[in-house]
Amino acid sequence: MAAKKGKLTKVLDHLKHEDPFSKGVAFCPGCGLELLLRFIPQVLGNDIVITGTPSCSAPVLLGQNNQSWHKLSYFGTLMTGAAANATGLARYYKKAGIDNTVVCFNGDGTAADIGFGNLSGAAERNEPFIYICYDNEGYMNTGIQKSGTTPYGATTTTTPKGSISKGKNLRRMNLALKMAMHKIPYAATATLSDLDDLAKKLLKAKEAKERGFVFLHVLAPCTTGWGHAPENTIEVCRRAVKTNYFPLWEAVNGKIKMTKEVKKPKPVKTYTELSKKFVNMTEEDHQILQDDVDYEFCILGGLSQLEGECQLPVSAED
Ligand SMILES: Cc1ncc(C[n+]2csc(CCOP(=O)(O)OP(=O)(O)O)c2C)c(N)n1
Ligand code: SF4
Image (cartoon, rainbow, N blue to C red):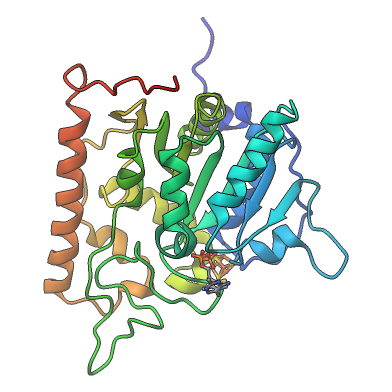
């Protein structure tokens, strides 16, 4: 009888391609974005074209002076038009008969706020490319400002804890659910503690982009902005999943399914205690955050039980 595969072996099996990045690149130690960026081409292959905006990923993807940090094709674009540019690239390659994968790779500031309009437009038109939002819950490259995905209570430089402000006093938006509601062929969440799940979703994304737009929302902790120890990045992701703060799910042709069931979810406090950005939260703040997490999970749970009852209509173009 064949031995059952360990978690690590399962992940390594997905890494079929070379890591195209040089060994030392300009990310902070423990940066979740770095792990994600190195992981994507090792799973999808080095023949992808990445396009993205000014952000923490840009210095590495653009290169410095006339030197490059990697062997991939990269097209740098604006925060306001990332998905519109990716649309042009994908359409050009299709017309020219070139078989490749366009990956529009952006932070949450671009995806959820500044570039949301054209992201939504590309999804509505069902453009054939993969949009990956690495969510570090803020505008990190310009000094840790809050974004639409920054959670309630978190301290950022625009939501400081002080006599007037007490951290972010608004709830986060659920970008992934919002994108799934564009009725695209594939939408999913993922994070760095569950790399087997992430790899499978990347491969499904590549397949699904033959049918149109794909959205992946990846929680990617930022050591500098969140204030956790570099060696804790994966643990932060693990606890985000175990508390239902960041549930792992996918929507294939509009059908939502959890890809990891958490039997007894832990209180959200076991997640927040690892990062300094939550250190000033009171019991009351924690309750608001917990209620928000429970509310989102309740909606997701409801949607994932609708299998069979709700079918995504086939669009005119399918
Ligand atoms: C329209 C526009 N507004 C503001 C900026 C300045 N800017 C450059 S990088 C950046 C932060 C981007 O945040 P995000 O997309 O979340 O990526 P991260 O820095 O977190 O990696 C901002 C606001 C810009 N380049 N374009
Ligand atoms: S500021 Fe945050 S997202 Fe940017 S490189 Fe450093 S750890 Fe990564």
